[in-house]
Image 1 (cartoon, rainbow, N blue to C red):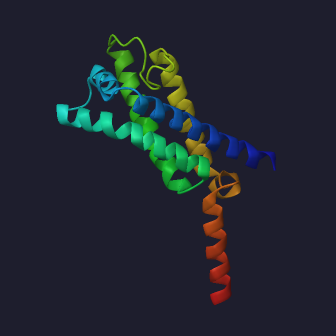
Image 2 (cartoon, rainbow, N blue to C red):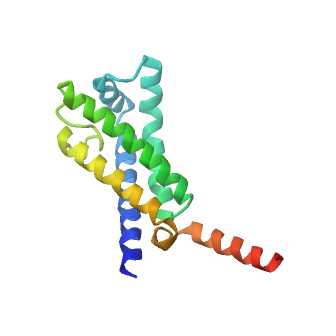
Image 3 (cartoon, rainbow, N blue to C red):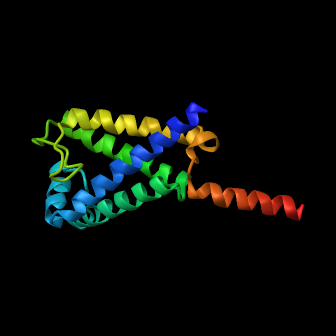
Length: 161
């Protein structure tokens, strides 16, 4: 039983991290995050840099909200896992190439973290996402809107068969 609460807490914490990260970037001038994206020096073109700087904060905000609500939980976890992989590659290559980044830019001006700490956090988030997906039916859906739809679908299927 405690495992279910642990899984819910992990889903909730990842959602909060993503909401804070996305909201903080959205509350700052757009150019601040664009500058961070450019500093990582891995995006292939200026157009893609602008798209990433505009799109990522919104996606983080919505993904965090979906995880908090338990709405499209599996899909949100998959996207968060993909984001974590992208972040691990971006931060890892910045560390290997010794880019002059004082901090990651993950939380705008709210929190500054060295790249090594950011890499550890990204690996931890990816590990938690894998855990949540592995035990999806057992506890990830505790207090989730998805659970309502699943129960209604199961009830409909039993009534029609």
